[in-house]
Image (cartoon, one colour):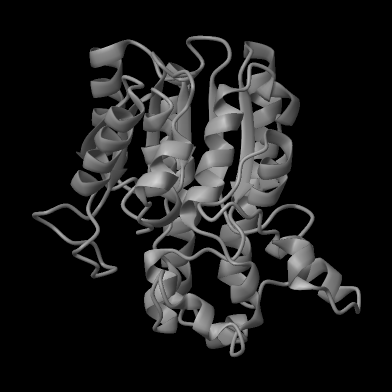
Length: 323
């Protein structure tokens, strides 16, 4: 979790509450980008339902007990209170692979508000199952299918059940959170199942954009860059305070970003009355930063996907040009 200073929090306060009265569901809000998105939507005034599998009473298969949906809801409340936006957070334990649980969740949203304006599909949790640079026939089938369950099936189940409520009011937005864009994912992602799991949400946004447009709603896919999530920091043995010490071992740390960066851009997109212009597209955090003028917590605008594209083209990009 990225912590802000008092100065950071003050600078992030919206002059208005552009999302006041909006109802948002962030599916997969336990940690990382999902948690930050929930917080920034609440800061902008939205009523946010934060879902996930890890609660203070029960831990998901990831085994990260310190990151719960209850804490996410409390962070949403704190951000909204700090901003004076009127937003709020509600934690609802939900396994998005269980259709009946998802139906119960949407029934509650409908009962309490009668509408849903924003659905963010950020379910994942498959990192411990990944075997990169391993051929399909050398990967355990059950392991691979679990990756598709976590990264694809959960998204399909949630959208299928939530869309009837989402499309009730024109202007609603479906957001698929993934890893990469249509531009950056044109090459093999190092694992058959991971490639499918991270390209599928991009295609979902493209397909659902076609289906939602006639009813006045929008679908987009978004991705962070090199994300300093809690899980990523732990994996590399660094913290939010010490990650800069790892830039020699892993140069992409130099253009890494906090979860708040994508979240700020997405909150701005949700508030944009013209967000339908993005319908069916896939955007990275740097795209959103350029479009809406947002920055990361340190005032920078990292662009790791642009940096990696320059590397791919044989260049020697300067970090300063992509941060």
